[in-house]
Image (cartoon, rainbow, N blue to C red; front, side, top):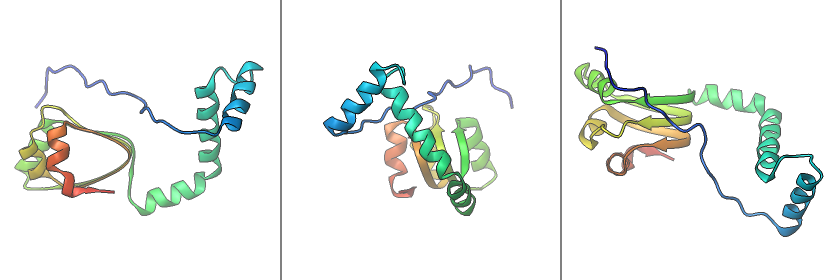
Length: 138
């Protein structure tokens, strides 16, 4: 079955908030002022990427052990209807972004999703998130 629906456009990042001490913030601002970094965000992203690179081996091992899909997984109504028709249930494990289309009903989500574990972000309607609350693994 093919769909004429436009492709789903999902954000490529998630906004987070952090608290920093004044001295750390001042040091970041000094590096920005001296053009080592374009802005505070550039510094923070670079620092995070450097730490993730240092821990790359550990991340690979844990990702494999937990059987996580890396990146984006999107679940639309058609995919979940196919799962229901096959009398199957999904165990969703994602490192990145798991997205459930906004036209997926809470009933369809409950009928097709056995568990959902997301390290990153889960995008779904408030109704679907509420319906799956006891199936979301933290």
